Image (cartoon, rainbow, N blue to C red; front, side, top):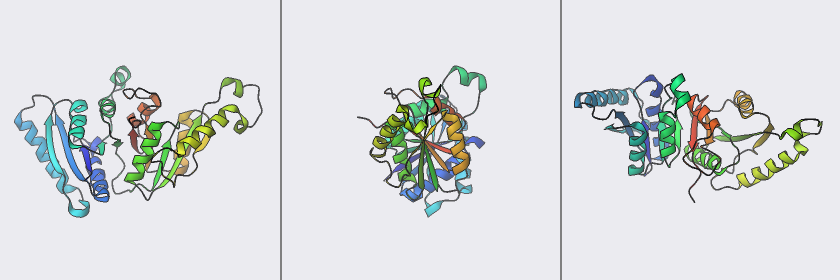
Amino acid sequence: MATIIAASDLSERSQEVLGRALVLGSDLGARVIFVHITSPGAPAMRNEDARQRMRRQVEETPLPGGTEPEIRVLNGRPELAIPALAAEEGADLVVLGLHRIRPVLDMLRMTTMERIVLRCDMPVLIAHIPASRPYRTVLSATDFAPACAAALAAAARLAPGAEFHAIHALRMPLRERIGSDDDPTRSSAYTMAESLRDAFCRMRGVPETLHTPEIVPGGVHEVLSFRLDELEPDLLTIGSHSGRDPMTLGNFARDLMREPPVDVLVSKPPRG
């Protein structure tokens, strides 16, 4: 049986975590572990208070299929405890809420969410849109790397009936942008991107129903913003990084995780 970890800090930022995990759990026939992490050495009273708040939330949340989640309160650092629990339980997905914005600290160090993503081998879903809203349209922001293919494959398992789109922001070399009136689709950079796109569509797990990924010249934030407005997707998928180091996050991934426009599913490249 599949397992989903729904990790909540019990704040408004995590109010959709349990509901989304339960909906997905019902669809996948998965068990759901609802977990909250208290600080190391927290007194028993604080742990019991958290457990009671979690029970109330379960009582107030619709239970698709009638299956209740397992409640756990753990002590420790969230960036260590959550990945450890996910690994121990063989989880297929970890669901998190929104990041608590700290403007100064966020500039100086990685967020707890980012540390959790880096330590989890399985996909991580950042959930904040109402759980009653199903994933009908999925958009992949892709650089055609294996991590992006893995994220799309995970989305196809979570929402097999959704419509899948992908977009690639093509950064044109300076020599092809200045002093040239040629159609960008005839440039060498575009031709290379087409080749990468073809290989991407053949990667393992990429849904066959994926619309042909668009290649759009421009900055990644600008291109994605335009497509988000046009498509209005329910779920955005991204790879953690296009490079070889699985313990790093790309700047674009970090930006989207910190301020996700819709629910965001992030995945590392597959091992091996």
